[in-house]
Length: 512
Ligand code: ADP
Figure 1 (cartoon, rainbow, N blue to C red):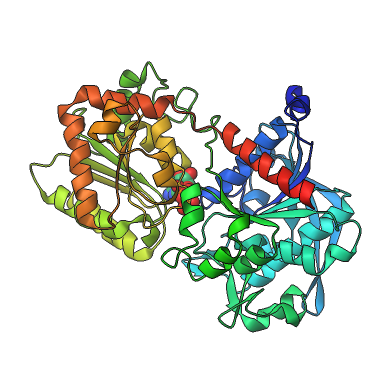
Figure 2: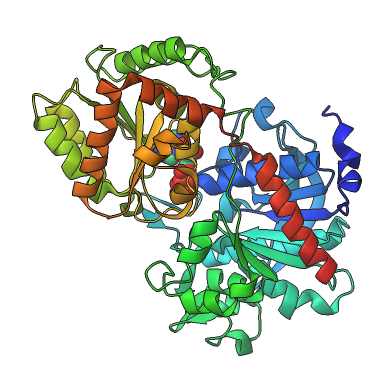
């Protein structure tokens, strides 16, 4: 049982104790394809610590349903759902579990036909054809559950397009019912590029009046757009870093929705994600070869590096820079920069840097990386899989972590890297710009640097920056230690982020 010692903190800090609902299509440790899951797993726990009552909703996917019975302790319930989808009613029910390390209830929306599948959103690189229907069902189920479970929330916090319909249901359909009339809504954009865009006929599935299918509400260039729907109807919008909150209001990064966001500029803010310190902390990490902290990292990282070189069948040499990459194999992550540089470095017999890559995604990148791996075994290790353990081992065992994203709403891996004493090399965009301070004469001098960054989205800029980084690695050990120490001593925890969410919620709740 988790202690409720902090229950009254909210009052001491002059905060109202709020009832919050968080709806997300993925939540760690139950289901995850990306950073959205990490945020939605950690934030409810932190909000509970701050004294708030949080209920979380997620679909019941196969990965939860078929997990070993004791892993998630899922309980079935008698709560049944009858959800209108277009002109028929779909039956569902609720199961429940607890978010590990908390008392927060996770309500699982069960509907086997929709959710008992191998993927969350698709398989073999193809989205499921009925995603609009699946997430309309989920969004409506959340709305109905509020009544069925008598949750009386002050605010619903929705995340990305999968739950974008909820603010619209709240404002356009449920608002007349006293149970719902005072509920505020917040929409968090974790990645603006994924919009839930569907042919216009799918509007029928949502059950909302066709009058809302117009360019100021749910329509976007003739299609139904569920992300835009959320952006228009939510009381406030936030994204996962202050820089990305600004960037998405520009034509370059607005993915076509910049004018919608500019229109709502007064309601758009950015809150940087934290990292989950119980999961991503080298001092308590059971997945790595040797635990280490701020003082013991030289020996700890050396042991983890040796293990990673062994695991990846790399030359077992402690003195060469080991460059780690973990993430989706998607254009967004800057593979058009990484691949040419990697090729040049691997082909150069005088360049002894090693690379270890973990990722899945675009089949074209799978082919290219597999070919390179065969050609350069010993200098390059590629794992085309999703492996939490290997992700931890890479963060712990690498010297450098590369993340030259085209855009990056927040990014977690650069923060994991710094917490693990692995120096990030990033492109200065979104959350990467907000967290990594480039090593320059000035920032080295004033002790603020924790990594390397560059602006131009070109392979040359990445290569130049990697040269700067590896030169420091080889030639200036003292400075290298300074960077590692800085990253490891910074507070990347959720505490500050959760308080920022709390303030934002409070503003909305007192307004509504
Ligand atoms: P995004 O959400 O855009 O995918 P983030 O850096 O914000 O990128 O978060 C990605 C999360 O997913 C991190 O926790 C990262 O470790 C994890 N991840 C991505 N790909 C893999 C993989 N192949 N195996 C294990 N973890 C992965």
